[in-house]
Amino acid sequence: MPCHPPSDDTAHNHHAREPDTFADVLQRLPELGRVLYTGSAKHTRRLDETTGANRGVWARKTWRALRCMNAYASAKAGTPPYAGALIDFCGDPDVSADLAMPVRQIAPRESAHVNAKWENERVFPVPTRVRRRGAARMQAHIKIASRGVSPRIHYLDDTANTGLIVVGWIGRHLTNTKT
Image (cartoon, rainbow, N blue to C red; front, top):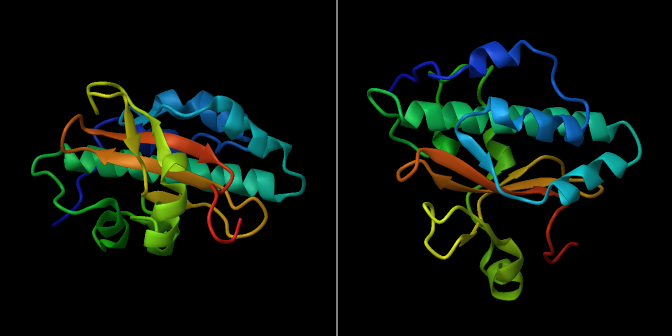
């Protein structure tokens, strides 16, 4: 199924300078009308304290991932609506490479071992219109890097309900067998 261009200003915003810091990413999040960040800005900004050139690369990769999520949520709201999941969207040859991210960066769920031991670390606040109790488990995540603090974006695809991708975490890799 062909992907329709996003209905918001995502395509236009791509041409603006990409963020070099995570503080910039947080400041620009309102540009993405279908991505709602409910996480801790403090934890996200801590990624800016990382030394070396990775900080800017990671901020730009994070921004591109968030733009992709926004484009996906816009496509889900389109006519006709996109039928697949985020991982399908990124692997769809009809989706502009400018809007997609590599499929290998997307983890739709955590392993059973991680869930058994550290599931509670992956529960983040969400609006009550998303989950009545105001929190949701976010196993799905985007792998920004695989070295150092290995930043991650944990999210909930709520496009079927609210039309949003709710991001509960942008920060260091959460606890697992390797951290």
